[in-house]
Image 1 (cartoon, rainbow, N blue to C red):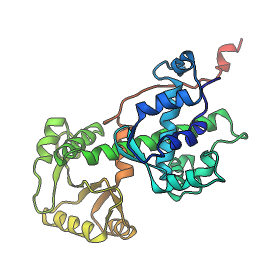
Image 2: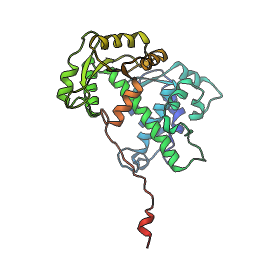
Image 3: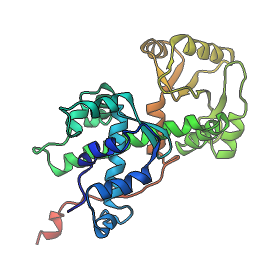
Image 4: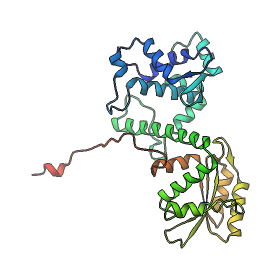
Length: 303
């Protein structure tokens, strides 16, 4: 048989974790290939890019979707266990298969899927038979991007505060500020100064300076209005007019409203926007595959 689709892997994937113990992704590759009686040729079949096998790619997405729905829990990289909800699903005699439609009953999964649409792709619904190939490409691109952004945030939180500081330097320089990594690094080094974590040149010559506050908080934390007020107070003390408040967490509605209402220019960058900027400016990420969509050049055929 051919390698099953990622949704077909979901139920047997969960069954393999039924004992409640920790299991590795490598184990699942072996056990699921055996479950579906895949041949050596089918196990070795690769994606068109040739960089990964179909089996590894599809089981990887099975793991991602089950995790987003809360049926499995990632213990550490490529190691996971089943959750109480996952066990309840297996104990339910009416559930004999799991697919994306089934996972839509879980709020966490719905939130994950909703985050795959940005302002330019809000109109794109989950894949169906009415969508054009280009719509499907747009949708799946955003699924991949959203998953990558969440992985980036997890990695940032696993790293040290010093690493986060260096990351900010690299990002700001990649965006065209700070002059160079050395210049920006020296500016960032002026930390812990009355609520200011760094000072960055807005231009190469340093004619304008931007003051920075960076908070490496848990993603479910919220930066509130008093936090922004404290930062603005620091700007006033420095007689500065521009600041960036960057965090791995979220900003409350009140915090954003306050930042928009004051005469100081304060930009708020939350975890989602931080990882989006890293994605755009290739900081902490690399290009795995690139597809170019072409159309016919009618001028070429005009005699």
